[in-house]
Length: 277
Length: 257
Image (cartoon, rainbow over all chains, first blue to last red; front, side, top):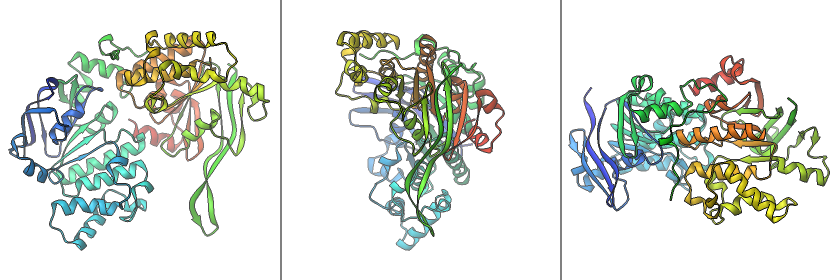
């Protein structure tokens, strides 16, 4: 497989404070790579750095080679053309990501209008195809529906329809299914995987949920306080974690492990919650 | 073990938008739900979104009234109980929620937040102050934390503040609605350990409501599976989760592997 995305020595500073220490990794076409870690590990900063969505005062250095060009060196204007078209992102909060007073068909159509040269009737047809594809038409949701009429899982499907509208090569999903219950979560993630195969789309999945990661990702990166401490194939990482932090994380997780019920979970002192000043 | 809190044939519905040839109907949220928790026992209630689990926890804590059915605490029907009895029983049933951030008033200090449930109780102020410090120690929050505000604490510590507030009335049963779902792996482990410790120390019962089967499996003695407002399966945790009899339970397990 060829690298779709190759991140080289990427680091992020907030003022003078390092948030991400230099880290490198790749994502191939059709591959799902998970980034995990706890609050403050820098996993969301990583996603936002790749999408150039960090607030003022953050400084990014290193290379982000995507489809052969260095995004880090790309002028903002050219980057905007890529964002949404070749690289799409989906977030956790569907209620804030969707405009509550616009019909979902219009919102999906906006993405197409922004990036494509489709005429209005073509857009309507395409929106309908997208709604079919993400399973919303089947659930009785139409282009005329408003976000508030939809369930949490359905709203995530709308976001997914917007994200894949332009057939991006890379999808960045930041805690995309965290707010959903397990069954809906599994359905939405299965859909993401189907789309990944269909479009040969690479996925960078940011999640703290080791259960979802084990189920969905081919490779996993573990971040601890801004450092990439381990990266490996999913199966190897879960079976034979090498870094002490990965071992601690897996040891404390209830997913995919066999803790005796109703007993204390061993929590290493150095990863237990610190008292904030 | 004797039964502490019991729900019998709970019925609950809301006016729905669904209309049919017969006109608009009420949407049933809970249908003939019966369950109980014994002293020092943890009952896990699992179900997907829309299964009715949050409504059920609101009814069990008295935040919502069922249309039909009874809630019994140590055999006393909470609806029939006379004013004073009910006043005595209410502090015995407490609740903790998923989002400690939203459940804690940002303008109040930890002391004010934790003390608040005591307002209804006939206790001297010294006794109330004493209890606040006692429960803060119980959940391993530093005593000087009492004068601080929720925003000065991490997510896991805020959940401890919420647990301290639930403990301050010296309850017999705590209903926990997705209480650890939003937490990081290590914080979740720390809070679950704390809840197990508190159960042992104070002989607490828990009703643990969650969609997360791994959490339910870890903390519950018995499980009830809720689907579309009905309890479809109930029994000892491991027998239900390892040998599910109903397709709903099997689906839930398959989705959470």
